[in-house]
Length: 510
Image (cartoon, rainbow, N blue to C red; front, side, top):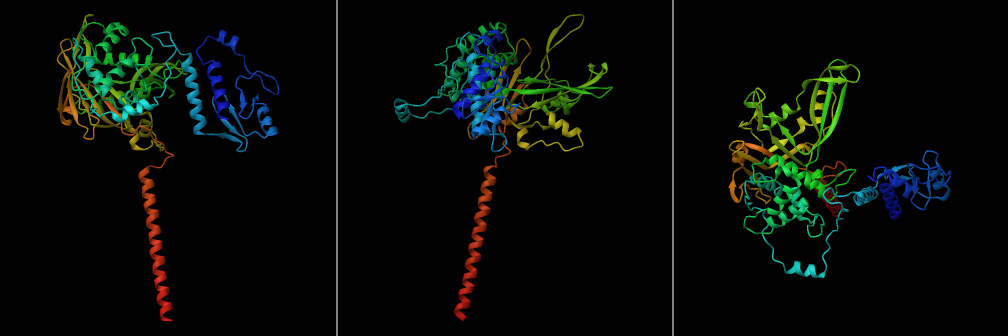
């Protein structure tokens, strides 16, 4: 049954209009299937999972086939939905859902080309150790993999070093590359950022104490982004976006339909923009993907010179002109909110601006100090959080842990716009969670108070709880329930023993 379901999902992914191939070529190779009962072409076929029958759902032919032959399950090949005849309803089975997602992604990746090289994607193959590998692992000596080494400055490349340090100390990226989910020795691409980061993680977490010079990664960046080539001063945030784009192009899971690559799985969120017409009150909403959040620094007082103040300004309503679908051009209010929170939140403070008069623009740096917290709660700045504040009705927000973030990296810029220098702080992943200051190849201990008082240009937060499953009971609750059951059983045993002793005493008296 699973084999037939997988074949149907593979056909739908390769033959459907989402596949990214030219429609004319697709029609020549694959024809729309016909209903086994009426012979009509099926644009949304339902297939029986017990035989080769495909039929109409609207006219009931597939259900009639299942009733006549006693078959229990059929599937919608477009959505992967499974219908059970005995239940007379669709069923949600994790095995079918996981198989549908994996098969669809595999077929999409077979047809998706790399942008940098016109070759098919290198499929992921999990590493299974053989006898030789097992013997090597048995005799291997464990090394310290703390990941605390400096990066050499290759000629005004401090902007690159601080971003790489923030990526190296990102717990999700670390787990991704150290789990061999992208193997640079198997990848066939040239100038692949995923390969460069894989080599960087392998070098940094190899146990060496020597500073490392990311020369090949720098060369790959120059070839992919001409604006970052050369030894001039560059912006760290600009390189951060460029690195994510390059990683997105070469990472496993990037398809032409939907992207579940490591970049969007780690940094990908959604920003909602609501426009409310001042005349009729109609609200139109637009959702855009984001990888980071850029915040203005111009506050009205000291209380606004905090990360929370910047986020309040970012999400507060503002007046603007807007073309309403009912009223035409009107005054409206625009409000931004974060619709989907990513696992890793990256903030950039807009410290560089161009100021001037009479058509002359002069670059200028804003040195306003912004206080950043070690723990951040994003509830007031999300779409649901704002709706719950404004609505009189109860809006379910879910557990508080879904909105809590911990700081793990801060990037600082010292000096002026043309003669500055980048340094960064990062939190280690050991049990003590110590903080360190990285100044190119120099690595020193740092206190959390020093980190929070620094003049931040970028800061990175990671979710405390990455996945919330309301249908799963937490382990501590299960442990408490088991303890309560055992206590009740002990009480019953004590009571039964006491009653037996009383009965024995009565029998002895009689």
